[in-house]
Each structure stands twice: as structure tokens, then as C-alpha cells.
Image (cartoon, rainbow, N blue to C red):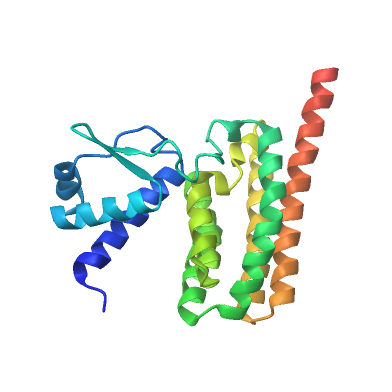
Length: 240
């Protein structure tokens, strides 16, 4: 039986893991003090110590006598990072889209097999916000949440954790693709993205894994082609 303290420690471990995975707490950086954590998260020192012990066991935390706790130099996720700065370059956006194509197709496949009614309600909520939002940042946040909801429907925590790791890098920056474009093109882009997401949702709701896989791959392929075309156009403009 899981105790309340153990459950709180689990939550704390997950929050620090996400920050480490996302690069917000790089190797060598100092963890907040026990007091700072108890004040911020409203947990006891016992919970903090339990969370620290688990993080240390996972190779993510190292204690230094008289100095405090630090993110381990050999933290497991430091070998792979995608920084927000990298997503300002078209080439890096394309590389990430190429990688995501394989990931998203598998996630959609599993989600179609394992989704629950609660999962579908979550997906529909974010899809509706994407449809109605006139604010780019809000629409992007809804886009991210939609993909995260699909990952949650796989019942595979590793997919969800990887989505959390990608964070804001999960959705290509629209301002990069749409810069210098007319407002009508912005709206057309948003409509196209919405239709792609709707096709994925319908396939998952119908519990048709192959169809969901095709819809997810088609969505990623279209995004990849748009960005490749944009890069080619920019290269042509530079060459003139």
C-alpha cells in the first residue's frame, strides 16, 4: 500500500526529473535546499529526503558534504538535449520533425488501442481550444497539450515523459515558418493544422490503430514538407 508520504515523494521526483530532462537543471547545478522545497511544495522534510534518496538512486543527484545536493555530472539525460535556442533555426526544426515522425506514429497507434473515454475528453478539450483560439501562443500551448494527451493515452509513461522532455520544442515555432506571411496565410495554416489533428483524434476515438498511425504520419509529413519548402525558399532568396 502506497503511503501519502511516498506518493508525495513520487510527485516531487517526477517534477525534478522533468526539470533535469528539459535542461532547466543542467548537470552540476544545485538543487534547492530542503527548506526551500518544503516552503515551495508544501511537503515535509521527510518527503524531500525520500525524493532526494530516489533521485540519487537513479543517478540524477549527488550529495556534497557541507555543500548540498547537485544534479549529477553523469545524469542520464544530459547526452541528449534540444535547447529552445536551437529551435530558432530551420535546419534544427526539420531534424526534430524527422525524429518525431517515427515517435508520433507509434504513439497514435498505441493510443488508439488503449485510450479511455477520459483520454478522449482531454483530447477534444485541447482540439477545441486550437479551433477557437485567435492567439498564436495559446494555440501552440493547446497543440502541445493535445499531443501530450495522446501520449498519456498510450498508458506508457516513457512516451509521456519524453513529451514532457521536449516541452516547448514539441511544436515547431509558428513564427519561424510564418514570418513575413500575410494574415490569410496564418489562418489557412491554423485550419490545416486543426484538420490534421482532428483526423488523428477521430481515428483514435474509433480505436483503429492503423488509421491513427496513417493520420499521425500524414500530419508529421505535411509539417516536414512545409518546413523543407520554407528552407528552400529562404536559400533561393539568399542566393539571388
